[in-house]
Image (cartoon, rainbow, N blue to C red; front, side, top):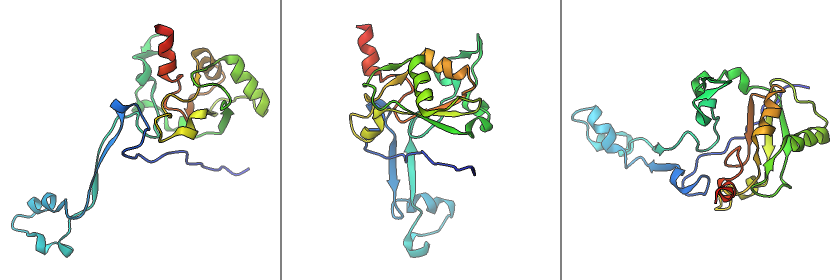
Length: 196
């Protein structure tokens, strides 16, 4: 079967519920008239009338977190150490070849919001789809969250993959994984209830 590349990314958008309020991206859209003042200082003596049709460039000024939109979290995102105390690798140290591999989709949409997936759940799903996890496979988890993307219900929706379930997969060679939810973890609103 020939290799097929599937783009799962979502565009960055302003004004939709894609992250917690304090982490939402901000995008200022500057049109051709708004940027004339940016161009003129490059060319002393240039006037707006001398620009083609009196226009500057169109550009977006973006303020965001590395957690906005489609992204890859490096081990350093989660903790300063990994592998029994070694310094955790940063995003520029993640080998690009880790990001190219067979995608294996696990369907956990039927699980309730806030549920923490166990190794037994993962093993049962691999059994259901008839796949033995191989080194280099990229595990893609489908939760109930995707149906709520762009709405206030998105961030608190979906299940999370527990530490033991994640270890079960990494022990079998998974290095990269993905989810349609805001986080690989269970939504924080559900986890927070355990600490009350």
